[in-house]
Image (cartoon, rainbow over all chains, first blue to last red; front, side, top):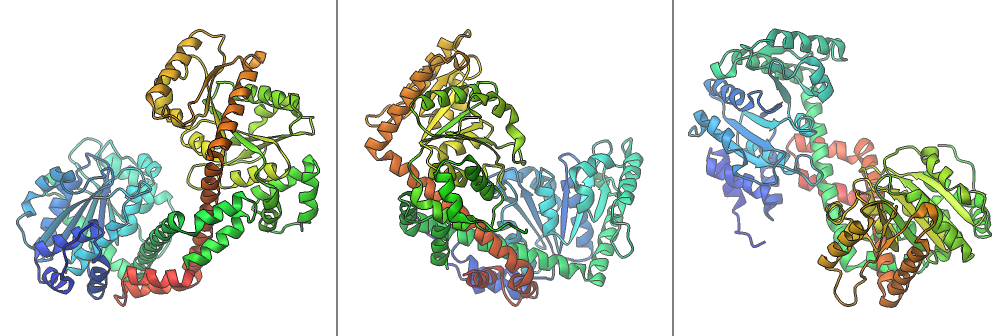
Length: 320
Length: 320
């Protein structure tokens, strides 16, 4: 791939000075796995770690985009800079995949203090791509106070999004996500704040009761642990949004006070390092396979001159 | 895991002398990932490579066990030693998983020249376990002339079994597997010999025609390539089995004459080496993760003292 040369220090400085263009360009470098990516990440490192990362997940139709839109308005009232990463784990395509979401977030499209980015993010094994944490790092280092990662709850992706976030907000709607459904989907474990949206509909109170009951049965009721609150909203009318922000604030304080913030972030960084290492090892192995020793060793195995374990030892030596 | 000490040279010699107990013990060492496994594989290496490995696959109900049973009888008439590995990719349990198959193969259970072994073989990523090729190596080195690997065609497993075999026999039954179904399932590409079993049923000729037509549309009609024959059988009445054996013989000759046998076996050995290397690297990474440098590097990433790529470089150095 021929690549335009990139003036990384200038680009990072522009992003930090508040240029949406520079932020967009940095995220594109991440998506394209551009050769300058390592330099970009090194330049961003000293500036990262200030943003609070909020994951927002829920089934299709619960009102994620409307809720995100309303939350952004609430944080903007505080004068905070916001990044929004809309991740579509079902699409292998970048860019316009979430046009609908962008339209619904149009309240903020022209606000220079709000960065909105859609990312396709299907990884090689069907999960989220390893590029998602790197994109979060860009938004963080660019000076965002809050980064919202929004994803459709499909299969594993909501659990993975929880792994990327400091605070995970799980959205449900009456009749769709009662407590038992939530337990089955594994979201009781990942939610730090539960929001029952469309609370003007029938069954909202029953859903809230169900959820509270299921949470009380879990192992998160021990002293010192965070007990996830359940908040009712009608995001389309901006009802209950301040209560959601308040619940997120309380969780943020709890994370900082107890050392859990540090713990979550270290675990996350460890996962990220591990993913990069494994990708590098697979690449090295692929190179060995077709140009070098593995083919020769395979011939030796076929001829009985060596066995697969002894051959693997030699490959391990060659990889290092 | 506490392990009994194993006298590997004596065990390998017993297996080669024709002791079914010794063969069974060696395969158990493979399944248990016994510490002596490396020594076993080294001791087997000079003796492997003589068996012709025949993969037998097909959907449930096409008559795989009955056909295998009939094929074994045919090969036994030639005085050949036979190994049968019945692989159940849907089961995480070893041992009795395929009791039904064993019962159906009871014609040969008491024949000391026929080794029958069931293996559960669900790998970590849902495919066949990496232990399957090692078990094949045991049967090969134990002096089997023919090793039959039988597996239910579920998802990817039939394609994977084809990757382990010298000759892959795909079984279909009338009405179940017409040509288009076969094409969809991807089995047109993997079959070296197609068998339409239960050929006394309605629709057998149509299935044969369909298959031949689909094969003629594929890219296997070029000169020099193997064109898979389609054979009709009624395995339960031993009809057509000699024709299947003949087709396998022809394919065996073709493989040897054209150099494809060597090519397939080298590719297979390469895959096997790669799987062992990746398993070893993951193990090393796991050790690093919890006792050593990854956790420390993750803290440095969180503090902005380094970035994930630079940290990954250090882990790669430590792994080597």
